[in-house]
Image 1 (cartoon, rainbow, N blue to C red):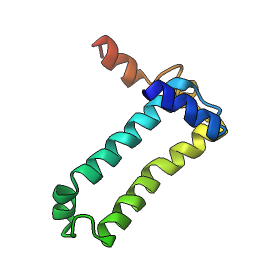
Image 2 (cartoon, one colour):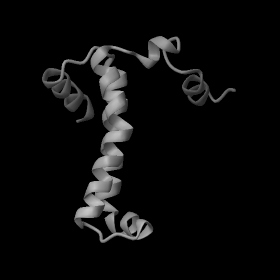
Image 3 (cartoon, helix red, strand yellow):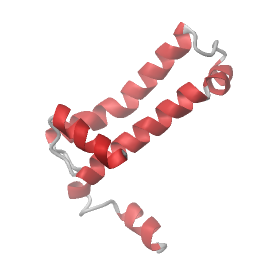
Length: 100
């Protein structure tokens, strides 16, 4: 499903980054959206807001925009984090291999 969504996203938005980076972006975005909307009573409660209220929805939108818009711009421009870090950040390679 995520691979299919990444392909569809790539058709609609002119991205110049790897499928791997697009999938990472989409999976992270979806996880936060699901968390913030599915757990609205928890997160809104921490923030002192009404779950599902306009202030909370604004906060979710602003938070997601601040976190993801710069990354989306980078994906569109082809500013690959993989290329900048030598095909995957060292911390990612270490986590996968279990070595530091």
